[in-house]
Image (cartoon, rainbow, N blue to C red; front, side):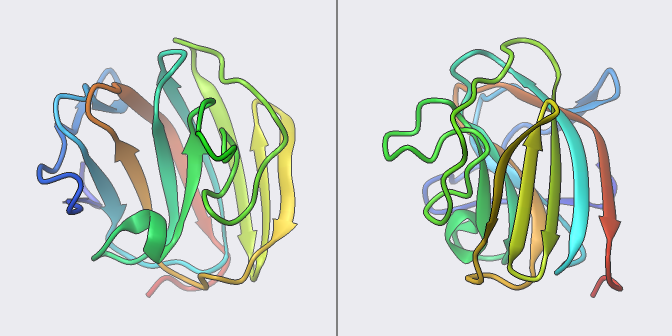
Amino acid sequence: LAGWTPHTTSAAPATGDWRVEEGAISCPGTTAGWLATGATFSDFTLKLQFRGAERVNSGVFLRSEKTGQPHQTGYELQIWDYQPQGYNTGSLVGSLKASPVKIIPDEWNTYEIEAIGDHFTIVLNGKTLLDASNSKHASGVIGLQCQKDNPIRFRNIRLLPLEKPR
C-alpha cells in the first residue's frame, strides 16, 4: 500500500481493512474507510479495474481534499447501480449523472477516467457513460472507497498526471 494513506470520515470512524491480496488492493468491508494518494492532481487520466458484488456500494474519489468528506470536498465517481438520487455507476455524485449501466458482478470491470480542466470523460468496460463539464473542484487527491459490508477490490491502477503533481 505504499503511496496510499488511509483516511476516515465522520460517517466512517475506522480506516477500513485495506490490504494487498493477489495483486489487488482489497477491502473486505468489515469497516468503512478510504485510501488517498499522497500527491494532489488536477488534470490526469486514470485507468483501473474494480471487482465487487452485484449491489456493491463503492467509489473512486477524484480531486478530493485529504480532510473532510471526500465526496463533498471533491468528486465521487460512483460504483453503485442503485443510488437513490440516480447518481449511479459512472456518475459524479451530486454533480453529473451518467448514462444508465450495470457493473458486471463478481468480475473485473474497467474504468477509464479523463479529467482535464472542468471536462470529464468516464468510460466503463469500453462504453462512454459520461462526457460533460463541471468546475466545482480543480485539484485534489485520488481515493478508493470502501463501505461497511461492501467488499471491493481494485487492481491495475494507472495514473498519468497531465501536469506535475504537487
